[in-house]
Length: 514
Image 1 (tube, rainbow, N blue to C red):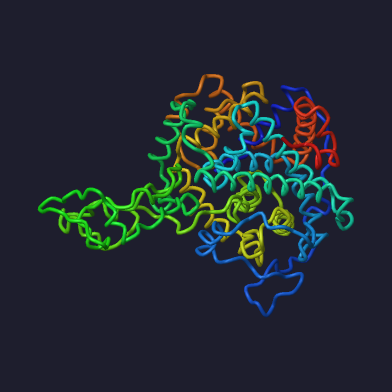
Image 2 (cartoon, rainbow, N blue to C red):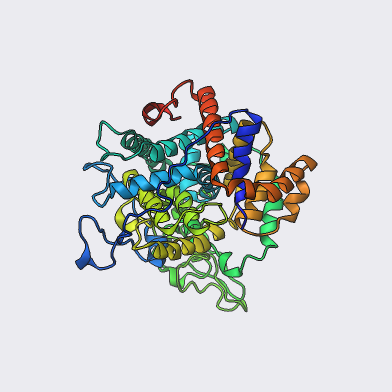
């Protein structure tokens, strides 16, 4: 994987296209943190202290259980967790500032991954703040600027409510999520679906590009084990068929080989299509009906009509995931926290283990403030080695499998992300170019069909990035230049989009939202 070429392009664009070269002073002094790497959590309840919480659930349990619990937990005691280590979090802020450009790119590609997860995508579609490329550009810049606040409002003293841009930002993001969840839950209770198909059925997507993307994935070397449906994309099972409802059927349809007569129990109902009215609402992410009562047959067409059990034909959940559940909220911060830890060299992040541990601690604390409880906060780990193991499982068993389950909603949302970034960079970072870099670099897979769609200009940029930018970005001096260029780009762009509402951390934490 060679992600350095992806994120470095933004720094060059900011510097050369917009003419905003500035010098940024490196923050890492000393070069590697001297803060003791104490345990971030414990698996033993007897060892829990105010500064050492209990570790989150094991991954196999977390992957499903975290979807069942609301993730926007209130924080009446404040947005700072009791296990917060100020010195460690401050160092984490400094690490994020030193490697700001690759961290931003982790955020950008994290958005792409999240938008294919129904628990993240559907509330965003419902909120209608990303319906066009222009809307998306503004929203994503607002999200980026809150990340700036989290990493730039340095913890030189303990953050205190009323005197901390970090806390103001976290609380305002939390409030936005609470409001969206309240409105979405009200609509779901009334209609059974928050994003009905008719709202997007007539919208068009860049199907030529997305078909090429799916073809490149299908023909890639990604193993079969990473292509199975991801638990994050499992739909909700429909309401189980009432086995006493066959008596309500007006017509029984006979199976092959014999007639059928409606009886009082589902297990005795020969082919009766019972209880369709009890099926779950027709949302994109719900199983439409059980096979029970619809003439189940085995592989040899035997036992036709013998509905012995009411089971779904695909894996599904026995609960409806809450809006902004613990898992979806965790993925909001996971991607731009875990990937610098997992793929540091490929992102041209040369931070030592102690610095990555500090970086990880900072965003575990951000997750707490956003409403993620310790039990589900996968960023809470005993040590950096344990973090890598857990993050790798999330990447290989949730993130990559989810990419094989694209639908029209995902295409629409991602099209708007690409259009927004393309417009911000004056069409130099085109959708096809970005998606090709994502597959080729992020997944370390060839993307021949996507590359065939690229223009000569895009292929030339692609080649230039591969040959030149890794050298450019692996130098601390050039990182300083890139950080300064990016700072200038953000200042210019946000001033245009938000008219002064993002000009410093204090104002951004309160007004830089959409």
